[in-house]
Image (cartoon, rainbow, N blue to C red):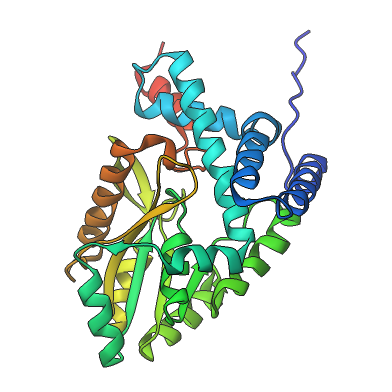
Length: 309
């Protein structure tokens, strides 16, 4: 008689999420009492060696890397996944020291073909929507502008870990309001803020089944056109930006790229995607491969089903 094999599934809000949050809360509290370099080193190592394995981030990163670069060896994938986790830990503690991050970013060099467009829009009271991915430290450019007197709102996707999300969201508000939670109400709030001449940030590079398939790193990935739609609806300049962590692991290059030309929303998002791809290929360890951008396991199963026995 055949028996069904039981599998344990991770449940959001379960003991794994609670344990991960307890580890991170304690580490954040301790790390914020250390000098900046020691703090970043500690959080990088903690996420790399403890949190990433516990939360399944390391496996997800390795699966994503294998999906995009199937010829990459297992050892290289593991090493790159560890570097990704290290950057994620550093980014986390960067962003929990809001005042410190703004002090650091106040003196950071701001470069790129989009700088002039941003300054002109601010002078004329015209809206700007910044778009970026989970790369480097995606809050560093926002902090650089806030430190220079800009008011930058944002739309964020809640973390899957509800315990962690509670203080994560509060910390985003501390950097610059208004910040809206993803959803119909939040999107309308961001649109209203931008339509009135405001500036805001939107991250686009997380899996959403409602998105349009756009090739990303050589593989189709469902991509929401929200950033393009909002820019078209409000007349805002759509400006990609990147906070690229320097080799010292502490400081950043802040780059504001030329605005994406308005047109078909899908074509606009293809442009944004291509710009993020270019950054990832230059610095693959700085993109958050720990996030869901594809569902490689599901796609492999579908391909096998099409081929048949």
